Length: 188
Image (cartoon, rainbow, N blue to C red; front, side):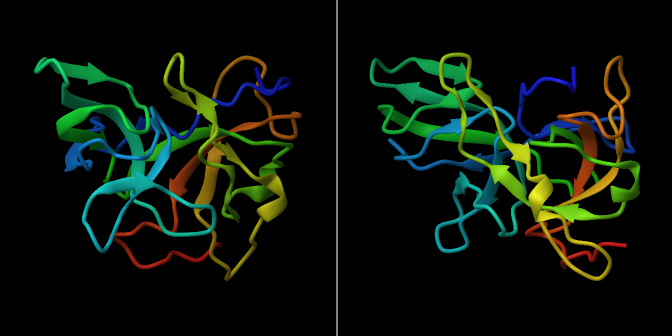
């Protein structure tokens, strides 16, 4: 419901092919970062490992889950990775395709006139470590109109009951406009 704030991160909704395929990447053993499902992530250009994205910078997609060997030698699968977890052979699964359409809740109202405009995240690292879900939100105060570039471009509204343009916490569909694998795409 978009009249109450209940952020769920940057959740992949669809791809033109019909499949959203996570890609496997490395996460450092015993990494000192917390990653939650649907949290925006980047590829660290110096190490090649997955790291949390930062507000205002290019990123590659969202964290979908992790697989690792725990301190008892058992293989684990989880939707979250908590900082400094004793883990080796860590594989992080992330979305990477720039054509994926995501849904995200805004931290305020988004109007239909914002289609084509771009926004940054208001929060990226917030989330619930108990259930492992991100609480990243689209920051309505960071709007960039024609010719500018921000992290996400609004392309529509998420269909559903009680979600309308102009609601207090609108849930919108976006694509990544500052994707690490693609040149920046200006707002239109």
